[in-house]
Length: 126
Image 1: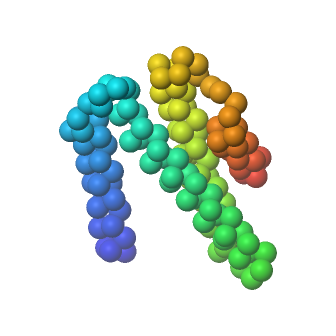
Image 2: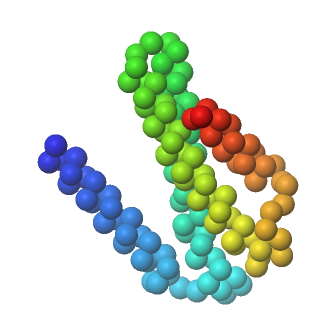
């Protein structure tokens, strides 16, 4: 139990440090200025969401194969975490896109597939 508390505290400290560094320590980008700072947050949330969805998918495959409840619970938990991170991605992306592209949303393959994945996992959780 003490190991878990130490690991959680270390993770929280690292996240706070990274957030502070990305918004206050990183130099301003020449072309986009301060607008690029949202990428540190946006991209890390996208990777975290995709990782959670991938682990959840794999654990649900294990559940179908092994029929153990722990794999089902892991799949649901990962889906919840993935939906939370992907929600942040779908909110922070248009915040960046409007000043950069002049529009909030464009229906390209990456954006649309992320949105569809998010909808599928929300329907899975319901």
